[in-house]
Length: 324
Image 1 (spheres, rainbow, N blue to C red):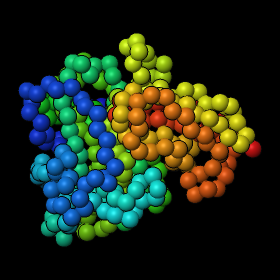
Image 2 (cartoon, rainbow, N blue to C red):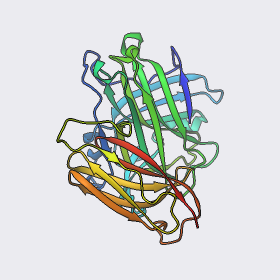
Image 3 (cartoon, rainbow, N blue to C red):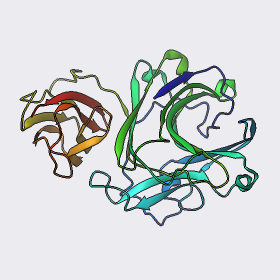
Image 4 (cartoon, one colour):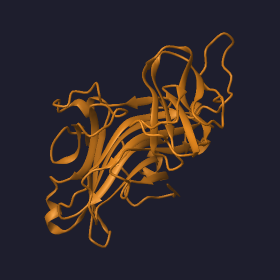
């Protein structure tokens, strides 16, 4: 992951959000299972946008185009795909690739394709940290194509200049699924700015650039131990017991309100090892036992793991230590 903070970015993804709007950042999650794969408006109705930039082979900017509602499917930007996931990803995924409808591919120009959602930052968001989390695996991307996921902020009062830009490189990720988080902390200077999160790739001469994404979430980070109103359930991932453990450990957690929840175990590289729970969850206390096995039934090796609980109300993490 890299962090670039700058006063001016060469080309900003032009925002469609009203500059005067000051609605707070809102939680978002999407596993693409409820979207109709054959619906051309499925992604745009879910709030997705696309934007393109074109450069010379020396990376000199030529022109940009957009933002436009995200297409589905077609030769440009993105589509809902099927059959690319395992159990945690379900039947449908998001495929993000270059804009192959742009004829400048034939001129050996660099085409940058961006697929993203956006929201406006308000004063109520100051002091919070938001996390964009997603599953990803490499598709047909080949060199010299590149890809990354991002969270960025744009200042509408400065020509939509990019003020914060946090990325996670997707160019060399495995062809097996992994989970990746990107964090953005909100400061007072960012009030009124546009927050965008999504995916980007650059390709030329029609080279492959595809990456698959799934189980997306945009949530505020909830510190462990934060209390809520008396008598009200709160999001909490409790310490597993026993921990460290040899064969199995019980993990207890609570959900603040009815929502889709995901409780999974990841290794130190961020790869999902085991999905302990994924689906609709009722508010209240829950527990699950992890027997030290991966989703494919194999014994996980000894080591340090992260147990991650994620709902619309936030994300919490606990360390697990497995010994054999």
